[in-house]
Amino acid sequence: MPAEALSINASLSKKSDAASYEPRLTHLPILILNVHEQCNCRCLMCDIWQREGGKELDLADFARHRQSIEAMGVKHIVLTGGEPLMHRNFETLCRTLKECGVQITLLTTGLLLAKRAKIVADFVDEVIISLDGPQEVHDQVRRVKGAFRLIGDGVSAVRQHTPALPIRGRSTVQKANHHLLRKTVEGAKSLGLSSISFLAADVTSQAFNRELVWPGERQNQISLMPSEIRTLEEEIEWLVAENADDFQSKYIVESPAKLQRIARRFREQLGEMPPVAPRCNAPWVSAVMEIDGSVRPCFFHPSIGSTKLQTLGEVINSDEAVKFRASLDVRENDICQRCVCSLNYKDPMAEANRGEVEAQPRLYQAGTE
Image (cartoon, rainbow, N blue to C red; front, top):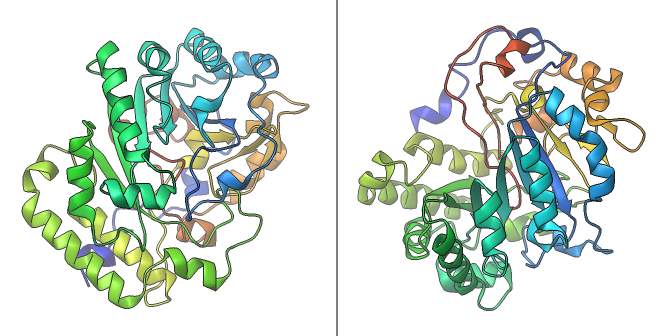
């Protein structure tokens, strides 16, 4: 067992999160915006593609939240879904957001990048593409023939317009690819991606369009058995040994210690180790706005209100939202303890909610698996 896995909380404040931050927010650096409820992949580890109806963000209705976005100092808007590029008025949406002075991060499967290349190049500041392994494995996981090739075509098309645009990969580690981290890095490089990051598959929450927590049989299709966890740990050791330059240059975003925590997450899922919450301040610096108007403090916690009858700013500081933040202790909350995708964002303005500045800002890459 790696020593790092035993000391995840070593740098956490002894205070509870609720005691460290003001429950009423004056600044919201990050807004995650769900803009289309359907997806153009059929991944086994995600149920988003099973949504019916094809609803997308109503731009006329969204316009009334512009004042809240500007008043709360939103700096980053992360477009997610489903597949954001399926929105029929994607360019108009991006223009509207740019008028608010924000940076746009696009979370995408990459299948429509080539068709939308000019719009993405003109308006998006960062692209994050889901990548599940080398070509054959990626196409199998996505259950879309030619998906890997389409990503490559899309990256090339965008780079023809804006060569320096950061286009990053993010890989969800699961049963189908846990032994292929090194080949996933090779695949990312072959596609021309700027970097690659990894996270453990989520199998225990109701995020990603799950009405209920998956039964054990479904979880076992994605999660790892003890022998597979050992294989993952060995693969991480080989990756660290063979790709030292990629860690040094941050082409592989996570440190070796953070990659080892992915293996720990799978052991926690099996009950072999007690769950440990990651360091995270998402509920105090971000919000997730769904197509139906509901607002979440992150991808995993339940809604804290709806924008159907209120503005975004009113929901963020509603009685329900303030009460939630005032009582939340990330280290002790069972949802936080099972989280696979956390945020520890530091920003001088956001720290006005807390009264201190600890590190450089870093936007987390949450979203579609």
